[in-house]
Image 1 (cartoon, rainbow, N blue to C red):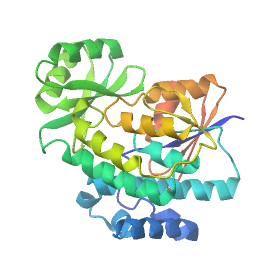
Image 2: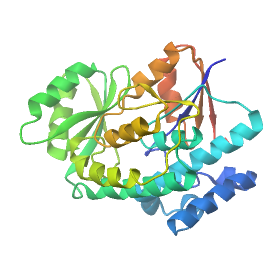
Image 3: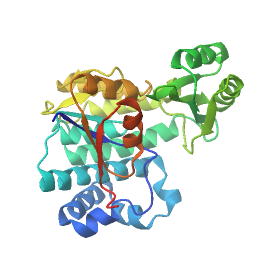
Length: 299
């Protein structure tokens, strides 16, 4: 049965993530040690003991989530011997997917996402940006409201996670204005506990810095079909993959379309690898009858 492996992004981090994997499988602890050596900090201690305020820092959360996902994949593959037909991630999760696909070395990915997190955090002064989830209105209607509000301010659709389920990102006052308007049209909204307005044009300084770093890395061709968040297209050529990762910093995450592409290709089984079950829930609402597993939490 065709299978897609799913890798979560920021927002899935939680204290004690990776604890079960590391206590049960030496291979997982080895990956944490490699990540810690790369960053010069004890990533395992941070994941298991916190504090949450430190783990939630973008430059810590991103390598922590990546390491848990790569470790979960390593153990899952050893235990079950399953090979995916596609790999796809949600935002940060694209880097985990590329490690699994053989495009990026683990150490390079750990360093890249830590820097990515720092640069994204630094792109906008604290308090100036925000993100809000919107549920219950069509994407085009929400985009039209954003365009009407965008006058000297920025607010965009940053994630399309499902049918009538998306996330706004941009200047705080503009995001709040759009949120108020969509509520007036019957939508539900929820503020997200994030530290910056990700996947919006406000991230342009981070995109510029990331480009310079990624161009110096060694890239391999994808051994598994990788689906880009930017346009929901399949890529295997390294130069094109690198460009899509750079674009992704400011572009919306089109997760719903990514899942739709692999479902159209015949995928019926999805395996979420890492911390949490957020992507499993999204896929369940996108693909009727999908078979979904989660591995990494030990629950």
